[in-house]
Amino acid sequence: MNWDDPTDTPAPERLVGPAAERLVGSVADREDQAVEAALRPKDLGEFIGQEKVREQLDLVLRAARARGATADHVLLSGAPGLGKTTLSMIIAAEMGAPIRITSGPAIQHAGDLAAILSSLQEGEVLFLDEIHRMSRPAEEMLYMAMEDFRVDVIVGKGPGATAIPLELPPFTLVGATTRAGLLPPPLRDRFGFTAHMEFYEPAELQRVIHRSANLLDVEIDTDGAAEIAGRSRGTPRIANRLLRRVRDYAQVKADGVITREIASAALAVYEVDARGLDRLDRAVLEALLKLFGGGPVGLSTLAVAVGEERETVEEVAEPFLVREGLLARTPRGRVATPAAWTHLGLTPPRPVAGNGQQDLFGA
Image 1 (cartoon, rainbow, N blue to C red):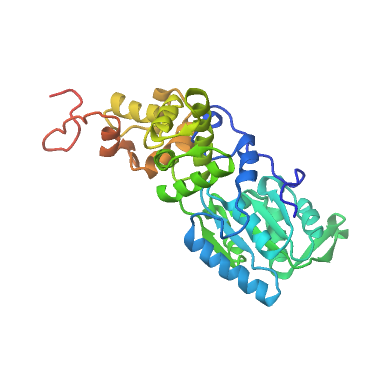
Image 2 (image 1 turned 90 degrees about the horizontal axis):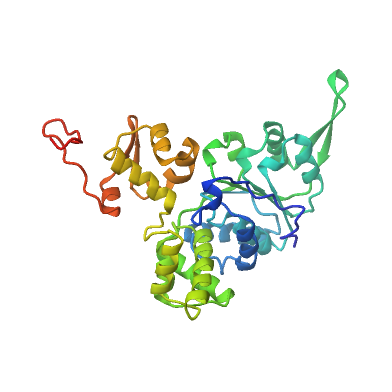
């Protein structure tokens, strides 16, 4: 199977600034990709978590095998690092088919997509990552390819241009997206099976960590795995990355065995706290609480106070803070929740009697 062909694998998204340096970032860098290739489960039985998705997908694949047909097109949505690429490879393995891997940003012209489609073998799985970022002409070509297994190749230009129909062998498209709302309905409706990947529970992440530790030949106890799982933001990719950094600490500072104490000490060095917040997350919360009394405050003002770009605060720090219930976005600006004050060990200002506004001047 063509799982690791470098010519087919999309280049990782290029990150700069704080997003590139974050230990708790969910986008894979080259090291993550290399490690994930070794840690990936090979079938649905090995895949941990996503119970409903696994059950539904198992039915789809088993039915297709029983009919001797290719599986329906599959759309996987969810945050980065939850296992969409892994599931696409499992689909190919379960169907006994090769897999071709590419990405939406790599397909800028309809001709790019036509070249890929025309070279597919019968039953092959085409994994299209970040499918929502594909160009519109290629997207429209994909409609016909998914539905009729046919594409029209335009030869020539202007009035003399002609469309030559090109028949395609039956194939299975697996599309992955982090922003399902950006997919146009005509494309979304052509997928026979759609699944949304949820964030993992700590108990599921513990199982992921134990499995990865076994494959990496790392000794870890139950409490150590629980400590790492609790700081992994519900994301297996982050759990595996934290495991590798804690392993390094345990080898240098201890006897190589990961316990709760070792995991806690290691992650303190890397500035990942008990809820998975890192330096940037805490900087945003501290500015919001200490400088602006908990808000509301505008995003641009908050970004200046933190010393980061507006986009960095909005796209890198805020999603997790909102999901954790530490920050709220309101029409008037960003507002800290009571949980944020508690997490940082601060006391919120007293409200002014009668109007519910915070008393910032102690009156």
